[in-house]
Structures are given as C-alpha cells and as structure tokens.
Amino acid sequence: MPSPTDPLRFHLAYEPQPLKFGTSGRRGLVIHLTQLEIYTNVLAEIRYLQSLPIEQGGIKAGDDFYFAHDLRPSSTAYVESENGRGGLCQAVEQALKDADMHAINLGAIPTPALTYYALKHGKGSIMVTGSHIPFDRNGYKLNTSKGELLKEHEQPINAAVAKVREELLQQPFSESLFDEQGMLRNRPREILPATDKGLSAYVQRYLDFFAGETLQGMKILVYQHSAVGRDTLVDILRKLGADVTPAGRSETFVPIDTEAIDAAQLATLQTLYNENSGPFDAIVSTDGDSDRPLLVAPSGAEQKVQFFGGDLLGMIVAGFLGVDAVVVPISSNDAIDKGALASVLEPKTKIGSPYVISGMQTALDKGRSRVCGWEANGGFLTGSDIERNGKTLTALPTRDAVLPLLCALFAARGQKATLPALFATLPNRYSRASLIRNFPRPTSMKIVGRFSPSESTIQQVSFSDEITAYDANVSAIPLSDSQIDQFKSIKTQLQTVFSDKSGFPEIVRLNYTDGIRMTFANGDVAHIRPSGNADELRIYAVADSQERADDIATQGVAEPNGLLRTLERMV
Image 1 (tube, rainbow, N blue to C red):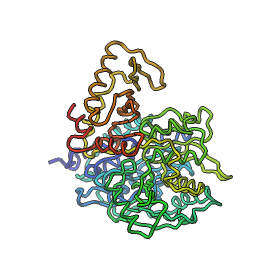
Image 2: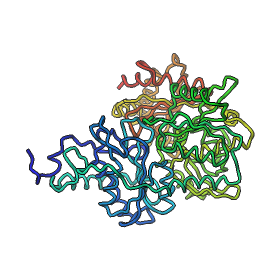
Image 3: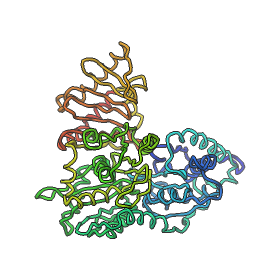
C-alpha cells in the first residue's frame, strides 16, 4: 500500500492512456480522458506557447486566454456511464490558472466563433470538443495567438507533455491536485460564467459581410440535433431575411460526420423535410462543434432530398467569393481539376486543416491575395481578407460551417436557381465518402503500408506503357527494376480486390499523399485512408455518376465481405 508521500503514479488505480494528436486536435475515449490527462496536455501546451515569440503565435503569462465547448455531456459534466469521467472544461480551467493565464469562458459556441474572437484579440484559445466523432469520445483543440497548431508544433509540444507528465506523476500524492482515478480531488461542478461576446462577434461577422443583401423568400429547414451552433445558425439566417424552421433538436448527443452521410441519416433528413411545413429550398446543419456544414436540398417532382458534398460546396463558395488561390486536400472531388477553378488550384495537400493552412500560407507567400481552402467535410477556410461588394471578410484560417452555407444560399438566390440547379453547373463528377467504425488504427496502417512504396518520397505512380513515379512536386523519380516490380505487384494485388467483378477497370494511377488513392481507366476513384481522430477506416469515392460513387462507397464498407474487409484479411 503506497504512502501519501509516495509519487502520484504509485497511487493511480488505472493505466493512463496518453492523448495523441489526430488530424486536428487531440481526441480519445471518454473512459480514458481523466482530468489529469487533460490537465497534463493543456499545461504543457500553454507552457510551449509561452515560450514562443508573439509573432509566432506566442502568449504571455497573465494574458487573456479563451476557451469554449460543445454540447457533449463530458465537456462540462461528469458521466456516470463512463466511470465518472468528464469535466474536461474544469481541467482546462485549472491548467490555465496554474499556467498564470487569465481564463475567459466564451461558453457553448461554434469552434470557428471561438477562434475568430481569439484571433481578433491576438490571444490563444482552446475548444473542448469531440467534433464529429462518436458520443463515447471527446477531446480539445488548442490555437496559438495566430491560429491553429501546425504539424511542426507537434514534436516540441509532445516533448513538453512528456516533461510535464513526469513532473505530475512524480509529485507526492498528498500534494497532488488529483486522486487515484486521475480526477481533480475537489471535483468542481461549475465552470467560469460565460460571456456572449465571442458569439455576438461571430454573428456580426456575417451580418456585416452580407449587409445590403437578403435571403428573403427562401425557406430553410435547420436540422438542429445536438450541434453547438444550432441556435446560432437559425439566428443568422433569420437576421439575413430567410424564413427558418428549426427541426430535429436533440438533448442527447448525435454524432454527425458531414463527410460520410449515410442512407440512415439521409432518411432522417427526408423525414424531417416531409414532416415540416415545406416545401423548403434547403436543409442546413453542421457537425457537433459547428465547423463543418451539411447542405441538402429537395430535387425533382418527388422532392427527394439530395446531399451536396463539402468538396463540391467549396467550389460553389470559391466561385461566389472570386478567389485567386484554392487549397484542397487530396481526398477532394476531382471536379475541381476540370472546372473554372483549375487555374487557381494550388498543389493538393494531406488531409487535415493544418495542411490546408500551410498550403494557403504558401499561396500567400507567392503573392496571391484572395486565398481560401476547404476540406471534403465542407469546412471552409479563408487565408486572406476577401472584399466583396465593398464589404471585407477578414481572414479566418480555420474550418467554418456558416460561411459556405450562406454563400451557397446567396449564390442560388442571386442566380434565381434551385440548389440542385446551382450544383449542376459544376463539372459532372460525383463523390461519396463512407467508413467502417471501430476499425483498429494499427490494422488500417498495415493496409496502407502493404500497398505503399518503401520510399516515402514517391507520392504518385502512373501506369501506362511504362511505370512512372513522381514526388510531391510532380517531378519524375527514376525507378530501379526492383521498384518497378514492387509497383507491378502492388497493382496486381489491389486489382484482386478492386476487380472487374466489382465494376473496376485497370488501375492507371496510385497517389500516396495521404493513404492510397486509386484512379481507374474509366475515371473512377477509390481512396482509402485511416481516420486521424478515431478508429475508423474511410473510403472516398469519385465517379462520373452519383450512382457509381455511391456504389463504390457502399461496396467499400459492406459487411462482412466488402472491399475494406477484404483488404483487412490480406494483412
């Protein structure tokens, strides 16, 4: 039996599970998210920011530091079904206090609202959120005083976390803030009172940019579920003149992944449309922390709801804003390569907002002045100020859901077109994403590794009369005979799964920017990638018809013998 003077590590009644960086932010199972773990990471990250120069996103002790949260129970409360875990905001508050920061609670507001307000004041911020991932998970996302953490920040932060972890675990148990379960001893129930200044500034951002314009005459159904911005979206749309009907509000948390809307979620949206007093021009919504949009509209005489993927939505928005540089990840619909935006398209990035942000900065460094980016989930980022109709939208280099929804609605109204007609003006390329949940990440990584080249410099391989490899700058890389044989073998193995029996012709190109992206002779695309934030394996499909894109995605996640499960059995 350890004594009170023994280190905390000897008293812990559980095996700590370190939080890791995902695609954007840190995420984990609530059952593993002790307040000790949150406190450890936040304290280390704040110390790291305090070590940076202000011009690099640094902060100073005593500065204001903003935080906000989504509506997941574990963000602010203790969840009995998760062994009493939760209270993430309380742990964040304690870490900010102990790092000599002046914590300010902006309340339950969208992630981009928090980021916008913090950047406007040149301060750091933390959003407590699990974003779109399942209910049993949560996490947080930290921003510097200049914007999101970038990939180059992760290694020094991890070193800082290791140092703080050791400090805390070595502390005598009698002096520690934490009990045997890794929870704050005083189990604080309350958090600081919230101010509405951040949310008000975010709403005003859009009222100012669209001043003098109106959505009057448009009927919009807002699917509210448990999105933190559910009332904010209604408020903005109404103030811009739309006739808004809120629907589908939920007091239990509903994970909505706007990148992978499945048949069941579409059926829910169809039911909401049918049960409310339509017809409506659109159904709009967001994911849990309201940084990814969801746009659906009725189509045809039967008023069947049609989902518009975020990668296509981004194209509509970029055209509406008149940008001169666009940055998108490799998972995006390749319609962008064929349409009016092809001339302003920057090199495609890995998946995740930090990569898109780096790409936007590169475009700015090259002299571009109207820069934007987006992800396949629809989250839209502005890398520069953008002027339109005499109004200026200041840069917000983080995912935002409200801007793309408003731009699409104003674009449709301005062209006197329905949303399906508006999207029909884009090149005829259709996409669908789907995923298998509870798919162990180590297995996903084995699949990617099995069909990837041993040289990481090789980012793309083309199969024609001869095999040609390219690096990230699309410069040709000479291949040895053994490398050529390796790629022949990879192609042959993949074609046993992605075969003509499943409707796939010959593979003509493989891209390894992020996962494995296969392009086939008929233009079909199947892209496999592990999720960065959860145990999920995703498939992105692109084709010349929506039916074929849907078919590829459906075959991908079919149980028990779909494409992804077949790949799993090969490793």
